[in-house]
Image (cartoon, rainbow, N blue to C red; front, side, top):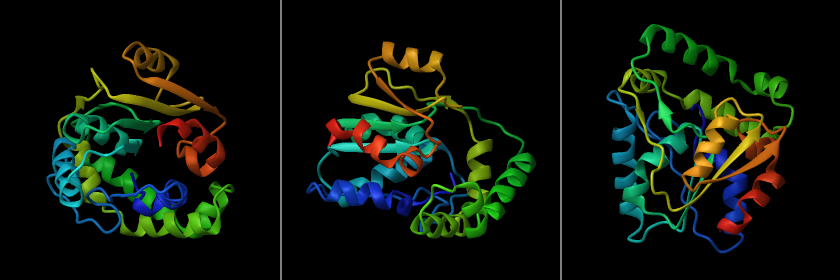
Length: 217
């Protein structure tokens, strides 16, 4: 949430350096994608799968999703059928039916705070390129699409029979607790920890993140 496809610029560059074709998507209400008044996880899955099929006739070798993007990826796994999936601090469940006024206020506050100066103060590990990308993403972020998503029906998209899957989480994590991590392992999903990392793991601990996913690409 509040990011964009360019948030992946450094990761994409590294993947491309290994002769991988890299496709990064702006989810509805993010970056250059249109707002989505009927936003929901199933609707976003529909759009992601439609976009992927317009770009490629093959299944992805590796599909990656961070946070809410990982929730979408989990819900789209059966249709995308990637050889390997990497989730980054991604909850697979979503509570629905939030109070729209509360959500609207919170996202509007987050959007307004994510200025270049605000990011320099709160994210000292960001490079100037990171700050440029993330502040621009906040400007483009559509609050009403996020509100629609929050009030839509919730669900559990935890993969029951996942492909070769990895969860990368900061340690500690507010989203993937130790109990959740153990449940994922029982389901056949590998979990790798990066101590001291931020929620956007690749921003704060890029080398550690790339090392964690090194055998996936």
